[in-house]
Image (cartoon, rainbow over all chains, first blue to last red; front, side, top):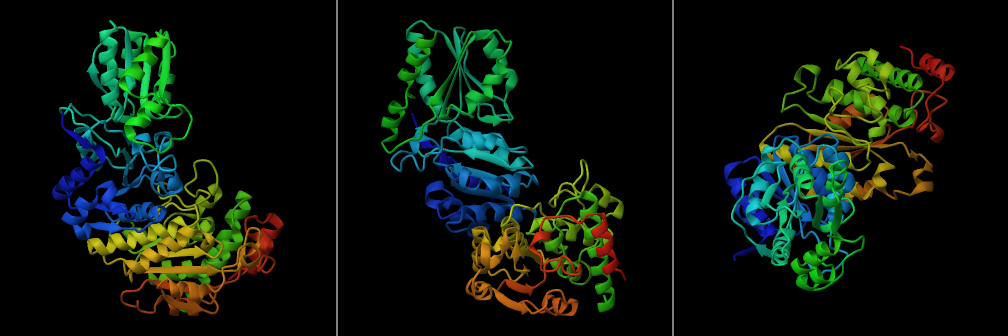
Length: 305
Length: 270
């Protein structure tokens, strides 16, 4: 199966978008070769603004640029969602300026750079901001769709991308705020987002081998969230699991949790990073360390059934 | 506009500042009074803005980076006709358009929501860069505080302004020397602020009395220096125009009571 990092897709998507829409400009903070905006820089040098290693200034500059009718995409590491938080909150979301954030290297699969760089809290931070739309594409094709949709939205949008090369699945229908049913099932349901799609697909296979018919739903939009679809599957399957490459506090799991009251749900478990920081290591080893491989997810689910 | 009329407008704005902060029982009169002359000069004489061209993309832009001086901006916008003085009654009140700090979504004539210090100048740099990119002839003005200049973001923005050669940007420092907890030198010395601005690549104009309308006008009307952002260093007096507030750190974020307001308004007559 073809593999491509979601961040690479982000870079490609920006170039495609730039060809169609000359209002699109890109800002980066000396990470163009990592966030993959260097493709845009090459294609449209006069629409690319390097901001130097000054992420906070990048965000507010983008806010100002947006007032001139342009559509700025700010790119840096997801871990700087925290560093830039006041600028994202007060500079962009409060006035609802038309600024997009493509933040890459999210989660533990960033790998070797270690816990200082592994964002496990960015979704929690972004989700709580009024006016913000939050995308977590699961693969390259979904990332193309997210970038295109972001440009159409009048207001701030956060796109979380990953460093690691991950499988590219056939394109699925894409509507902002709608989840995708990857597999129907009746014994339990797994809700996931981002690149954990690969590992939840593996988990579903392991479960099937053990006679457990699990449904799998992937959400590329964490906000606005497809509450209706989540409630439908929770009510039907009764046993609900969320899997994310993010802290179990404040991310997908906590988006789903409040929806479950009164829906007859018997089991609910959040699977993700258990309120700890990451560490250095190979991405594959880190997934094992934090219990996020397919077989581990399956075991975790079985232990709760 | 002639000097006398501008001076009279500045007195009117100062009365507005006293009126609204007194009614609200809150707000920041000291740092509003120190930058009043600059705001009046900008809105009545320098910038091509008016309530009629509020949506014109080519209008000049103003960002009050020291957003807590909102009463000065609100007074100026009101005197300029963006809204009526009845709004002062709802300054800092529920459902009012005059929020504690300027809100682009609520108040006519406001170009950026500010209040988190350091951000306004950075937004202004983005505006100037965006204007250059789109061929928009507008000029972007921003007023920053001296206490605000302790924020690292001010200097990140300054570096970018010089890097992108933003000669369509004017940064105005309201250097009244005081901040919440004391003088700049007591809290966190700015050192040689003029030398810092020069070192960051600004074309610097120093104004000995930033509350003298003629001196302020002369600085603001100085033609831009090609390829360089402009920095106007206004030496101002905190609380200017109200004798018992002048140079007093205690009037940074305290509203006058009814009696004090009456006394202040009397001093600001004419």
